[in-house]
Length: 134
Ligand SMILES: [Zn+2]
Ligand SMILES: [Zn+2]
Image (cartoon, rainbow, N blue to C red; front, side, top):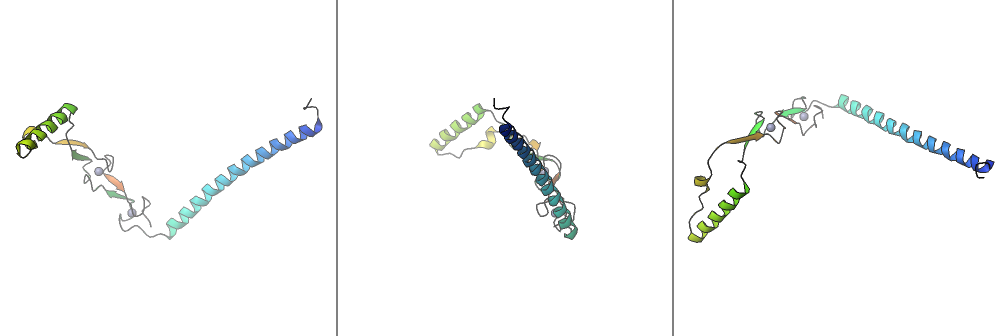
């Protein structure tokens, strides 16, 4: 019975229009903000001078791995090894001797991928945040 009442129909149609208008307003304002941001960024970059830190490149050679993309890291150890080590350490401490880990752990160099640059060899310049200009 509600649908036949012209008043309710008008309200329903009105509400639908409002929702549609509201949605498109949000969409348009969102796009407007995006465009305004891009314009502001372009303007800022036009006015900006090349970054002195990276020489306008936006990226710097990774200073963690020195562009080797791999860094020397600790050898992976099993839980049993760690337990054994701590046990021998505590027994050594009781005897009053210096714990000698060099004897027990073989000095095998282990390399892993550089966590600072993700094996790219480059880091984003912190001064200009990769824009190359400040
Ligand atoms: Zn690196
Ligand atoms: Zn820079």
